[in-house]
Picture 1 (tube, chains in turn green, yellow):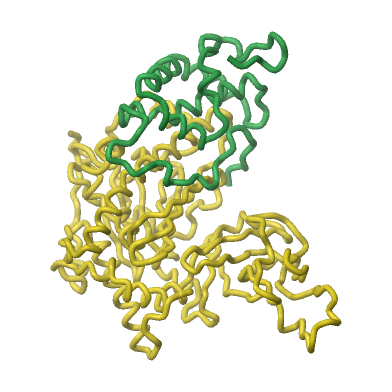
Picture 2 (cartoon, helix red, strand yellow; picture 1 turned 90 degrees about the horizontal axis):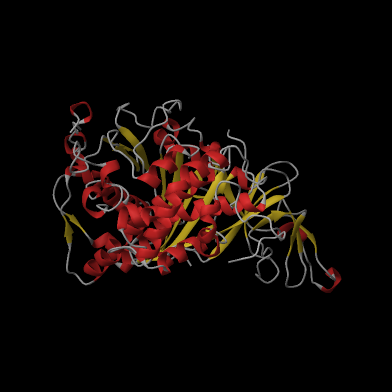
Length: 126
Length: 417
């Protein structure tokens, strides 16, 4: 498990301690890394992550709905990144039952050449 | 079943007797000679989308766009006079690229070979050791410019030095009917690219009928874009406007989302196109869901020749096909989502992107199999369903465009490169 940046600072915001064991494997760099994780993780492990996350996801989303991108502290950013991994694993569980694609095109042949930053302010709605 | 949303699909063949109802040859999908004719008649003389105005908002901003079909790239730059211009990224000294960055802000372009410099307006402004050249006329050695015009914030270029149509004429009625869609609100952007071993038109076809939705997309969007009240994926409507075509796609309002999917929808800045859900607060332009069907989810508009916009009420995305050969295409899909108004909405955005990518991954295996069957002569004709009329339309438009160009005295089949 990674050490937190400041000594005993918690890895996740208060109220989300139960998700701490997921941080090491499921807080990932970006959207490309999340797809790669999906393609290389056994279905049972994806399912376990999905189930653990789903139990706290409504509360985590309510928490982050009060925060702005670009203004998150390190613990909040980890919580967001866990949710972004859930966004990638959702269809793996709910649509396919596996991280790979039954009769699907090789997902690695789609290159994500421009991706949305995980935690940066976005423009104002026009 | 829900009687209120049960689809009452129109028949399209009777509206367009000129397209016929018989089988359609696969020749235009696999004949290398026809591919060469397409390049000359279509791709070298039609307006091709290269980006959006938000990619170069201020004087000094530029971006580069590779055009895989031609092998070269163009630079789109906004000069001090605030005008956008497009140039071939080719130094007029020896032909090297004058700009290597994909985007940026600058006062001009300096070729990294010998240091020739050009202004943002393309004029040649600096030549190191100029006295060593013979009769150098800087006024004639500016960057080569392409025709550029803008429709609803989308930037188009044309390889033809004197385009036969203005962009406005080319977009025609279909373009006018979409004016007012909130394209500029799509500020959270992502883009996928892939090289698929299929004809460029096959890939367009794959997004132009929903007959395949209940079967090919049985794991994913079968129950949102089809379902018990529309079991065969019938279209709400298909409208052919000149060389362009639009499908209005049905949405299942009675669908109950899966757990993560439901959380994503609740926390998205706008409804995902895969959701079948509509944001009723958005005022749609005339050409979007033109029949004003209640159980509508999205429209797929193909602008001839190679650009598709898929528009829902809360997000849109584009597909662009850049042919490399009769049986090879570079495909680019660019998604435009509303900006997140809080950190939780970043979760909804990610899921919108992932669901879209997953659904398109399902489309692509079929394309390479179909291409092999066509290349090997294992299928030589297609029989089309009434709701596959957009495919029939593309066949006729492409054939007609090539034949008209050649009848007007132009050379046949000269490749683009």
